[in-house]
Amino acid sequence: MAYDLENKLVVGVSSRALFDLTYENRIFEEDGVEAYCRYQIEHEEDVLRPGPGFPLVKALLNLNNLPGREGRVEVIIMSRNSPDTSLRVFKAIEYYGLNITRAVLASGASLAPYLTAFKTDLFLSAYEDDVQRAIDSNIAAGIICTDGIQTYDCEHRIKQIRIAFDGDAVLFSDESERIYQEQGLQAFEENEKRNADNPLQAGPFAKFLKTLSELQKDFPGEETPIRTALVTTRCAPAHERVIRTLRAWNVRIDEVFFLGGIRKKDVLQAFGAHIFFDDQSAHTGPASEVVPAARVPYKNRDLSGEIEKKDSS
Image (cartoon, rainbow, N blue to C red):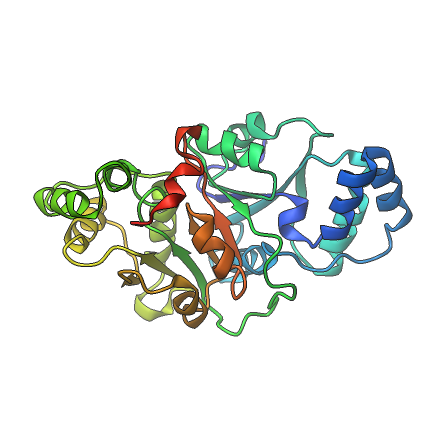
């Protein structure tokens, strides 16, 4: 009987997202693929250090150890590495006791076609092109920051899995963000007040949030091992539409921070996020100094870069 990925939370993670391959990637960029392959093979017995995606992956896999939840989470290595250079990654997986048994090793080819085939709910990678194609295929994905904190809390001081999201262009579509960019703050706030009763359209991470919310329903009250947060630059009067949207979606989100210009970094550190998703590098960069963070690209490249000039999310 074939192994069924239905009714599982499927997370695809690249080797650079899971482990610290900063030095190895520098070899690849400066000396080419042959030098990179040679180095990886020569250092197969050298254990890789945890990377930015490691705390989240380990925490999610631990859900499978809870009574009655065996096999609820599936983590799959999705890498552009060749099979010949992958042994070092698998040895590190074994060393850290991660229950990851499946992999896609594409030898430099795009991973995008395989994300749908593996029913991927979340994809984490340091390679922007693969993440962009995932977003274009309606799969939640983030370009994980690899130049932030250098030592990751593998045991994590907070035992709950804590995932934080930005609002506009992440959980929600960029419909309101566009108004802010094109017409300014006053027009944005007027639009949000006028449409307070009209739910925002779903963004690239809406489905993932709904999946987490369904997982939370398996646990009574405060016993849930997952805690979510919305960390947004929105504030009153643009708050009501957000709350009514989440209510219309019938999803649970545990904490909401309407910051109104207060920097997100400090809030995320206090929340203890395993990861934070935001569409703007102006937020993911500082956040990655204290927690793992990933940037969510826009579905259409038209907005890339330009939309970071202002900030309503």
